[in-house]
Amino acid sequence: MLQKTSHFMRQANLIGGEWVAADSGATLDVNNPATGLSIGNVPKSGKAETRRAIEAADAAFESFSKTTANERAKILRTMHDIMLDNQDALAELLTLEQGKPLAESKGEIAIGAAYLMWFAEEGRRVYGDLVPSPWADRRIMVRKEPVGVVAAITPWNFPSSMLARKIGPAIAAGCTSVIKPASQTPYSGLAWGVIAQEAGLPAGAMNIVTGSASEIGGELTRHPAVKKITFTGSTEIGKILLKQSANTVKKVSMELGGNAPFIVFNSADIDRAVEGAIAAKYRNSGQTCVCTNRFYVQSRVYNKFVEKLAEKVEGLKVGPGLEAGTVQGPLIDNNAVEKVEELIADAVGKGGRIVAGGKRHELGHSFFQPTVIADAKHRMRVTKEEIFGPVAPVYKFTKEEDAVRLANDTQYGLACYFYSNDLGQVFRVMEGLKYGLVGVNEGIITTPEAPFGGMKESGLGSEGGRHGIDEYLDTKYVCIGGLGL
Ligand code: ADP
Image (cartoon, rainbow, N blue to C red; front, side):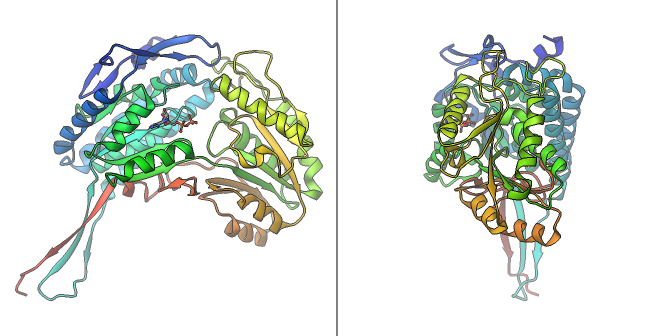
């Protein structure tokens, strides 16, 4: 392990500016998915620690909310610089606990830093309004204010950048926070505490607790001082958090599950579509909420697409994330492998034809062969369920309207992709797809400048873009009367 990695690797929680153990002293083991071996442990905190973290954030809010946007932008810019100066160390820590290839981890650290820079800039442009008044002697002012204490709960698939999208706007807006990283990947979350402290964020303005998800999540959603919940994770847990937050009417943003379709039309550039398919399916071994779940390919190009995709997929190098040349790391754990095996068995039982991969990888642990299943059918489980693994079912369609209808036939509405070189078709299909993110002739589209958020059961609100900071602000209307004008 690099010297620098251990500097960021904290085995404690950050509460009120102090690095502390759980009250009980209990810990949770953290494993490297590439070896199955423990790399350390973190506190198993619960309700009491979470409550103290909320109280620390609430106390810090008093003064932090009164700092200027410029002061907060300076902290965010410093955090950005610390991340990029330590990109290798932070990426190595991420790969150790999460498994993804080092190049992807470096990319994740870079995009996290880019989110911070975006919000450092956006925070200085939180304008209010002076509205023309219907009364001669009154004036109407609208101002934006930070909501207060923000609770951020994040998943293991992007353990660093999912927090950047929440911490960035929270700090920029003048909010303080309590963070709960996923138990599989807590170190990248705890590293945010080191980065924030070194950048001069005041004690208590960011607190991080690890441990029991239901106890911590229960307290975060129940406590009246928490004014906003921002969550990235499954739709199932998102619904629980929404219900729990209802009692205290918290502001919520939810980035939930997806079931992304990827449509290839006859007019598409097939090589470009295959390249996009690799990126949109196999990045992070298929473990992202914007990963393609279903490929719909028009009949004339179906065989060609399947053949080229299978050939490319067979060439993807599977290995430990820290090994040079690896493009496919292990899945997060054995449960993930079992789920993928079940879905493949179901697809094969219903007429699916495996044209690449299909089995556990010879490297053992949670490594899995990148897989392509041709002749996919609507009745297969992969049509409805989020795969979250390196498996690409490819369905055949004939008519454009069928592709759009099938693509929309899901309760999810996060990302979708399609490839076409017919301009009229591009607009028809783009307008017909009920998704929050649409990639046209592109397989990877996330960037801080654009809003990221789902429709339907994929979520509420958006992260990034011009509106990303609004989720952390309240609107106050002030009527100033008796002006005697
Ligand atoms: P995934 O399937 O990607 O792990 P989850 O929705 O299960 O997605 O988990 C995302 C995050 O939500 C993790 O940090 C997890 O610990 C947390 N979580 C899980 N259950 C709860 C809960 N009942 N309350 C609050 N947070 C939870």
